Image 1: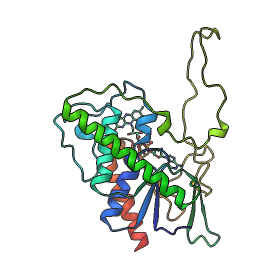
Image 2: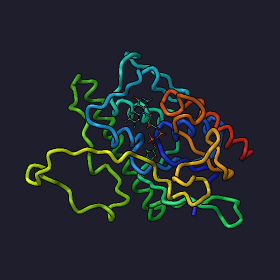
Image 3: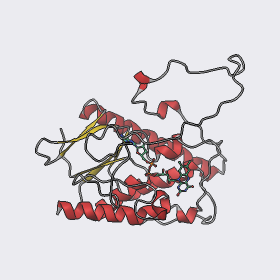
Length: 257
Ligand SMILES: Cc1cc2nc3c(=O)[nH]c(=O)nc-3n(C[C@H](O)[C@H](O)[C@H](O)COP(=O)(O)OP(=O)(O)OC[C@H]3O[C@@H](n4cnc5c(N)ncnc54)[C@H](O)[C@@H]3O)c2cc1C
């Protein structure tokens, strides 16, 4: 068991933003990410996806847009490349391939117990090493393509890169020939919601939605960030993360002081 001041779950813009400000405040912390940095942008967007906010708005705290197309619109992989550069630039303590499977409190409510899917520290170190190695390899390939003026084909998800923490729950049906199955139309109308059932603390409402006031939950020391209207209209997009992350990181730092 390792003891840490702060654990951030998720290395999207919100987690990275809070990590940046905690780093600035000199606060020890770690970011656990179940997939890769910016995983949602890689595996939860479609192939032809482009951001609908211009590049100059897609910035994280302390790392402004330095490209040639401030009014252009990044693809997902371009945004994720920017996120990766961010992590490197500020040496943020991100551990990829680590899923947080439960968060609870100690009996005396003095600390949180955060459980992950990692088998042990040695296995985690191996995964971390492999992630970093693979990332460096990809970065080198990217740099070579850029330097040689070769236009790479559009990004495709590599199943080998994907974590699959719930594999045993998956359906055995992997492919369906719609013609043979006489299926002519598929309408995805299930809506979407978050699953926070792994947080075993009284911070969720009857519908399982997080309860917070500007990101501060009713349980001292537990915070939420990255939701629309957390504090303002821009809270749910990249452009708004600076303010919210700053506020949450300062609140954490004050609490720990
Ligand atoms: C289709 C779509 C298009 C969008 N387009 C834009 C746009 O153009 N511009 C814009 O500014 N915003 C856009 N947004 C809104 C917003 O920027 C995204 O929703 C953004 O991804 C939210 O950032 P986040 O860091 O809060 O969450 P995410 O980016 O989703 O990051 C959460 C991270 O947490 C990880 N994670 C989750 N659970 C666990 C766990 N238990 N253990 C470990 N890791 C975990 C995930 O793998 C993920 O990497 C769009 C959103 C959607 C859905």
